[in-house]
Length: 366
Image (cartoon, rainbow, N blue to C red; front, side, top):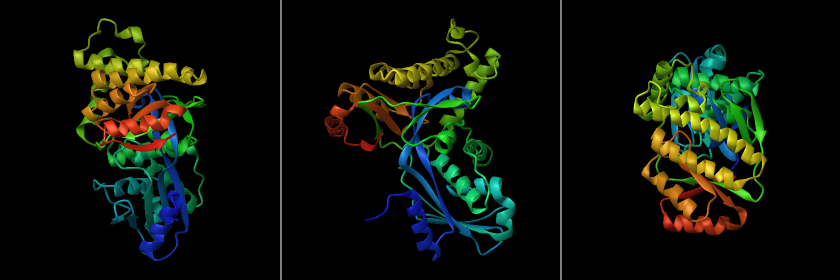
């Protein structure tokens, strides 16, 4: 039987491509976000969950040529040869090269390195394959070169790689969930202070990740535009981050054009939904949590304008078929929908959803 462990998949890919076994292998999970969309780069609160078994595996061995980085991706069936002093090239290898430049540039310059990667995450599903790739790379090279890999420090370094080398102005939620989170458990995170706490699941209910069939691309203009809009709103409101605002601070649209007001309103209300959602999880109240999910989706659709027709249709259908709540999850502009469904209804609900919307796929149940 073929292994589904990303570490083993990466090790097998390494041996097949490079003709010898790797010297080490590491894994980092993807994540799904229960509540708190686009709040992380606004200094707000998030409630992600690291995914059991779904993530990126990295296999590593010393190379043959000083300064040369030899990469193989079984996912793309692609080979890249880079040098440690290169700038970004605009493809998947940048995520790995950026991590190597940050964590072990001198070592790679001296000896070279070979890396193979494999993933069990569907690409473009909004489950943070890029963050998992960064975290897995940093963990693998730390072990390979005999260094300590503190999970919080790894998350911070991975975010810096994505911001400064890859050129994606993301917050820290994805990297933090992948590096610090426990697969299968929710994680409440204050993205400004990096204070965090585990959050319980709701007995008798499961979160279902539904693929929309629309691949999202966060490096396209939409995401960066939202970041810039939030920064513009901060400037007009004279605050460092939108998460500095209380809900009543937006009464009367103080000094904001309509579009920026709606962007700010999403951030402020989404932060409150994360707090309310944490309390709902602790109280095991699926009804309240489901309503918060639906409110979050409506806010993403109307105020932040990051949903697409396909994810809107999935949310509407999921709730009509009996889900407690549903919302688009991830950076937006496609990707996946998350639904909260009672255990006893799960199979019938999933069958009806895929029959009603044949383009959907059941990615995971967590």
